[in-house]
Image (tube, rainbow, N blue to C red; front, side):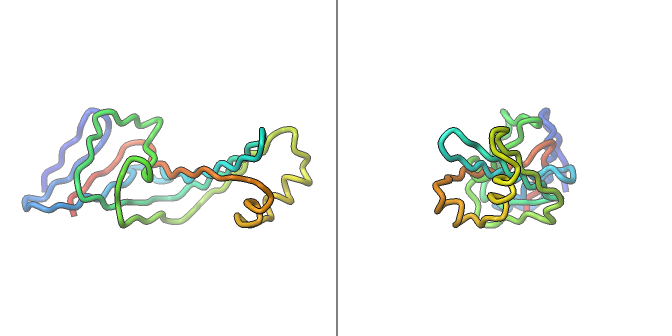
Length: 138
């Protein structure tokens, strides 16, 4: 197996045989973040879930020349893949607008996604891999 490190902190592992699939994962634990942004009018609620690890399988080796470790990459926007896994959600945080009373924040946290939609909230989601990435031929 050959290992190649490029200038943006991505370790690429190549097997001597030709294969067409690549497994991409963060090299550092807790570098997978799922971000749900709920919006209603001028209000915005951010819900973050940090995962211990995760991976995706892609058919072609992506171009990582513009990859920024601090910003990371939104895996659902940047890659086409059929397999992925997020492992062990370890931390959840919700950030509410300051103008919402605490009781309303608690009420909203208790609602399901369907109930939030019924109340007029819309969602934008992103799942990001941050930091150095491991890319392995599988």
